[in-house]
Image (cartoon, rainbow, N blue to C red; front, side, top):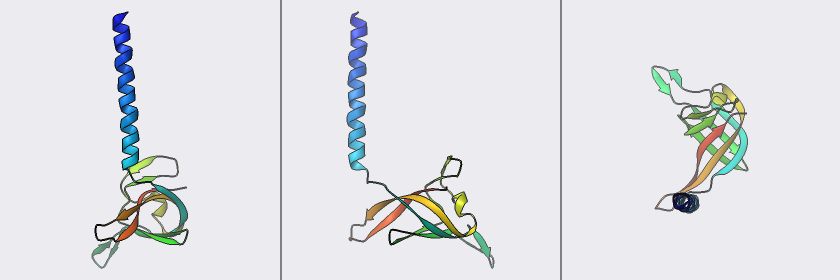
Amino acid sequence: MKGRLFTWAILTVALAAVAVGTYLLGTLNPAIHVSTGTAYSNGGDQSVGGYVLPAEASVMADGTAYGLEGAVSFWEDPSGGWHDGGWPSCLASLGDHQIRFGWVSVSAPDGLQWREVVWVACP
């Protein structure tokens, strides 16, 4: 009986520690904002005159322009699978594409501020 009580006490303390740690990590991380907009993509990496131009896209959402170049940190394909890095499949063709994306506010020590896109979801 004492062994079972000891196990429950350790489990309770461990769960409390996880809850406190999760709360602290959540308060330290920046808030990720979610927006939807129409992105114009160059279709991905392109070879022009012996040079490779990186994949680029720009998206307007709520009156703000966001730029994507080369790759995104994480992206979700239309079937719901997540990918670690690379260029989103929905931006792989030239033209306008509807996307949902997450961004965070970033501030440099000199006061410069911008919004960084951290993930893209393809519908």
